Image 1: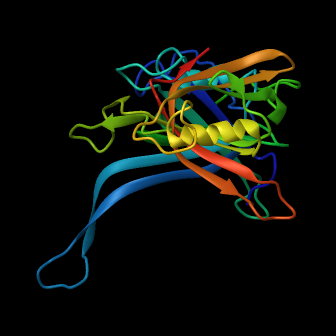
Image 2: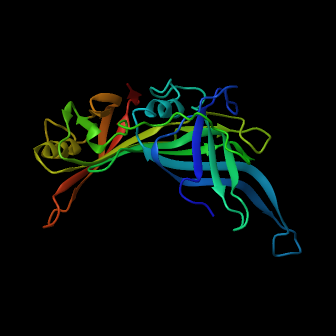
Image 3: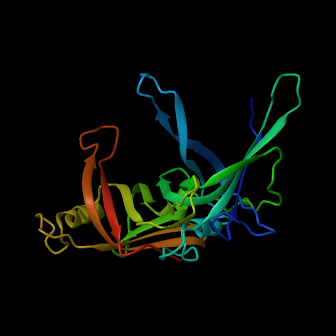
Length: 310
């Protein structure tokens, strides 16, 4: 049994696949963190004999760990997150070794009503990003989400991180700190937007159950947005037909437009994500005949040409 305030969560920027610096710095991802998944899977193969219909044993194969969490973006912590998400110095992707981190996830629990609290900490080694996203919602906060694979783990009976660098007051990014520009013009009446990247890195393996290292895979980036329908969204509908010069009928080819997603806190820039070549995969009208809601237009864009961050 655990209670509020009885958990710990921090990470270290790895200096090798399964290693961290001798005097590591510990970082919190941000405020309002939520851990959606923490799974250690020992891949098993059922073993059978010719004279028994039921399995007689299970043989352990590869170890596969998965870890997923989300938090509120902060000007204090976003640079550290970029360092463990993007392997080109936090500014984008480059060929070679994956961006790496080690995570410390702990809890205090009560074994029995008469016993004092006990502590368990899981140390997740060789963590690599598999999926990463940023989500804007009108009236809310900017949320970041990260799904990782990890190579191995160990368990402690005390909490390791000390002096953790955390978000401070006045640096959490509110919804009105987000701006989305399409082809050089700010998207008006924006209701939601999600930038998501999948297939980021992958492990490679040797003759042991745990991975040997990790490398860049084939990052695939998508941007989804929803805005109240107006003159600008009418232009976006024309882009979905294929051409800004012929916006009333479908074309055989699609023109690409640049998109830029930027964040700031009280005039201080947190980050600007440049998406140079975007084509709309789908465009939808929502709440067309609805007395209680405005007509909105949703679009999903393929993002090509590489993501760069400043």
